[in-house]
Image 1 (tube, one colour):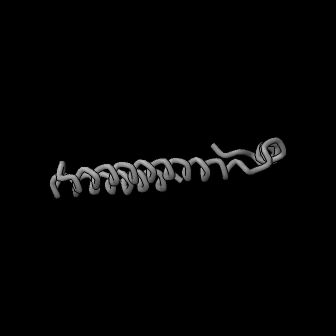
Image 2 (cartoon, rainbow, N blue to C red):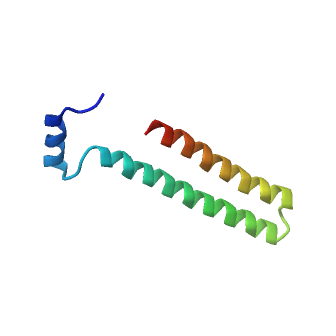
Length: 81
């Protein structure tokens, strides 16, 4: 359900920004958190790989899992918008 012009102008008068910008900011926050998680996961996996606690296949699996999560979430979230 979309807002009427009166509702949109009332929202802008009180908040200082348009309602459509909220979804853009929230989407940016979700992807920022996901990228931080990915950096942490891959860095941790690399440390384990460098100390030979993880095999090449396990390290690759961590990177592939993150890539799959990132692409899947991106597909579903951008499809909604």
